Image (tube, rainbow, N blue to C red; front, side, top):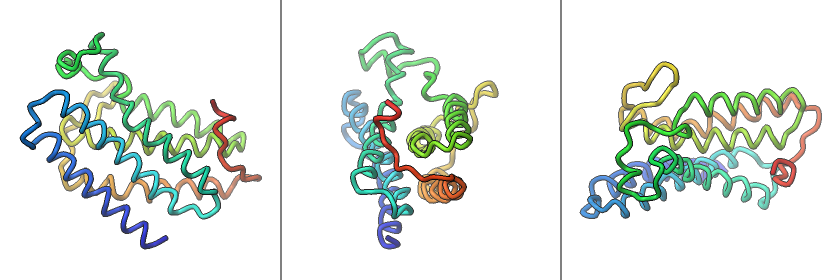
Length: 204
């Protein structure tokens, strides 16, 4: 597993760096459709790799359960951008790429509030399924927000937006956070009286 941890960590850094070059500095970057598709793919890839790193630290979950969670994290990482359509009140790329402000799914405070509530409830009620789900959400939005934050900073309502995240720090955070969150997950999970693998039929 140590080999995969190193491999996926290097992969997430390379994906973020090369992905940004392809999306914003390639000869096709002037195309709104190209940028929208490739940007979503990069976000999805970062969520995918983040969750793979996370599960490299857990040897108890089955391949099936891990695959479900990796898929969930990957999809959420990309779908966060759906709020562009809500803010623009349009499904046209020209409108969605000329917004005066960001949508609620790009508000880091919103996700911190949601995941904190889920974490506290799952921890107090010893619901491992929700506990794991909250970490998938944290991985999804943190990878998305950190990447966007490299250009626009983090939106921390009601305090406004932070300064843009420097490229080296942005890449470092993407590489380290999945490992850190996996450690936090296991510390909390160890206090549960009964460990139950996540079952999405229980939370849908």
